Length: 288
Image 1 (cartoon, rainbow, N blue to C red):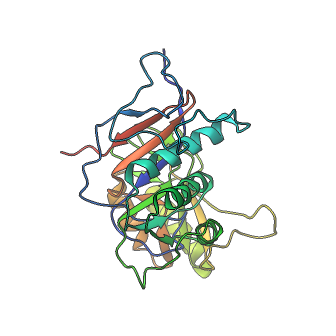
Image 2: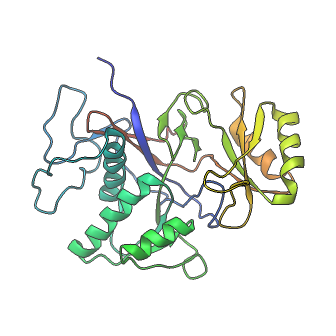
């Protein structure tokens, strides 16, 4: 029987970015031994169903403090999957006295909720650095300690979402698609943050060199384009073939007017996929 596909992904990466980059980003702890490739994390209070769901890796899903079976939820399956992935990442990697990078998007809400629960339950001393206005508001909403890269330039761990993850754990930055190659399932493109006056020449440069189609991302609830926290525009590059992503990412960043991209290359160390059957699939970066 084929395993249901993932709804949501969280990941950790290595280098600290500037807040407000395209799509949002954060750093992850390096040098940790984070468990077994392809293992599954089974939430407490749930029974195993078949051989595909079970306990594995370095920890278990973080439920209620008393381990009681959670009450029936009115969440959609997609939202439940996001909750599973977010809370599993927090359970397995958040430790006392860490500086955390807090990403953006719908999945990160569940991760921040669990961080706040653990701070209260375990009296953890944590510092949280946001990558966006949304992340900052979440940190304040849940009473966590807010900081920035000026005061804490080195981050121990970051949790964020990803749109698509390939076999080498290269990422397109929030929807949670597990693919062999980037673009197999995620068709909304790679976000590129640009200064407003450069969006036309950047669009031409990218498509002339790498093909595909670029669209200026337009706002939904207002007229005109989406504007980032830094006052920039977002281009969505819908590429038409598999590339050598490290080379492409570097080349795009060298184009005048580009602030950053939504590609995360050689940064993720572990990815969690919230599954439709209620389990969490964990995958680590392959090492040569």
